[in-house]
Amino acid sequence: MIRIRPLIASVCVLVALLPGASLGQTSEIRVPYQFQRFDDDFRYLRDPAKRNDFWDPIKYIPIADDPAFYLTLGGEVRERFDHFDEPSFGLRKRNVEDDLLHRFLLSADLYLGEELRGFVQLGDHLQAGRGNLRTPTDLDRLDLQQAFVDFSLTPEATARFTVRIGRQELTFGSQRLVSVRESPNIRRSVDGVRALYRNGDFSLDLFATKPVQNKPGIFNDQQDETQIFWGLYAVMPVSFVPSLHADLYYLGLDRKNAFFDEGVAREQRHSFAQGCGELQNRGITTPSSSFRPAALASRTYSPGPWLRRPASRLSRWRCGRASG
Image 1 (tube, rainbow, N blue to C red):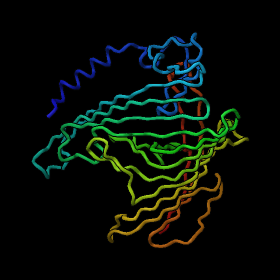
Image 2 (image 1 turned 45 degrees about the vertical axis):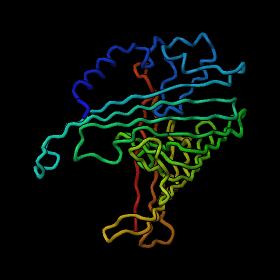
Image 3 (image 1 turned 90 degrees about the vertical axis):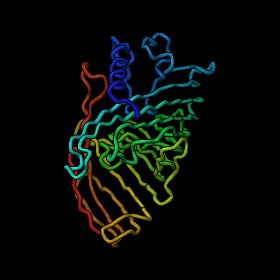
Image 4 (image 1 turned 180 degrees about the vertical axis):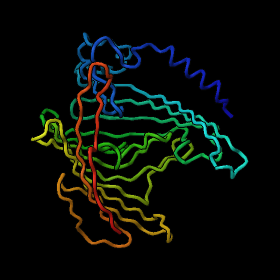
């Protein structure tokens, strides 16, 4: 059993000794770290004059004379300590639960020109002391968190179209509907294909995936053959309101073995939005399917000089009705 208090103390000392530059803090405003490592864009480091951060030597590693051929290395460490008092409301003998959740992600992002890219991320997820509160999202000793290839079909155009194939993480909007499951120890990933279209403030994503089943062993995660998740997600600016964006989407979920009060049955769920105004519910509803309309509107605020990365407020309002 890992001794939790000494480990917490060592982590705190390590964080305190890290230089300020390790957190991306410099004397000038720089491109911030993104929520997901594959969204980090360090192409500006092609200019040697801009390489003044502690981590710049691994953010941009040239591998050819062409500056578009380079490698980026990255990683994350999260240590989380939880204390529960009377977690079972006095129904069990063990009335106190202390646990430490450890997450370590290591990534490599390879760019072979403007047309081809490969991204690999390994994940190490450990836990200690959770006892009766242990969940399936706590422990996964070592596995592929992400491994995908990007094919850019319009590398030189302003409007970019990219096809992504492999294991990946999905996030849309404020992550109320589709998220990476950041709070638990193991983030959610899926296996499948995704098409991305970007043109200024307009974005369109189409995807067809299967969720990944996390297992405690080493390199033994596999896709869940009982589930399919697909959809379309578009974000577009609202011209008459500055900084306002509308999120329009259709999401489909098919689960062969879903649990209900009456037992186990197949579930087919369809969620969709039609603009930011009138909502409509169309289609045939059966006991094993539901149609859930909704609409999202978002507004992003520009960061001030005191913020290290942009702050945003998404999903300013949402409404809908479900049946089935």
